[in-house]
Image (tube, rainbow, N blue to C red; front, side):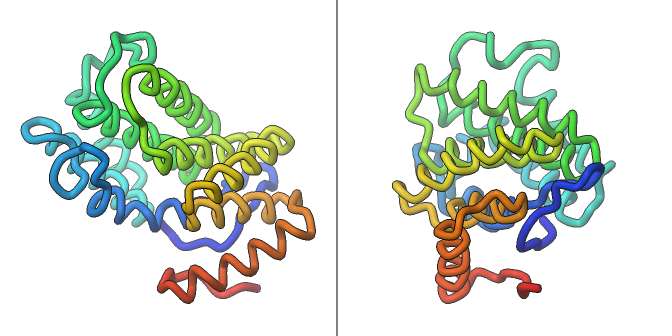
Length: 226
């Protein structure tokens, strides 16, 4: 995704606090070993195709090819399940085989809505992702990073539709949850959202600056400030 170091919540503009979360997508596709099979992908068979399509959609989104991203997401959705099926009310599915792919589909769909200017669609997908995590938690051990990132995307979508107080409350939960699990890029992204909305406290602004320096020191490429 494009690199941004903050966000704008002005009317008609897209919130963009997800840089840290998007940079961790490489770890989604290469380093997540939470029972999803080799290199963190969905298990063999159709799952590999679904996962590859979602990754391709994310890549197209990063290049601002919104139409191409939407088409690939549509194809991936048709492979995930019956397009008419309500994922949340459907029978429980396990995380490794189906849950992770479904959640990633909601993530990229939400980001597509936010970046293409369809913030209502972005919020709908963010809410669906949040509900899906709750649904999956009943039967699966959803990794903390996936749960926290889902909440971050939901917070960004709320900011996009002007729900600043709700967004700030959720962003603070993201910061706390990410900090407790050592998820520094997601903690930084949550703080970026608060800072961009001019909702961060003095201590949060200081943590944001300090954490930014830490992440740069660890090799994360961030846009210059200012």
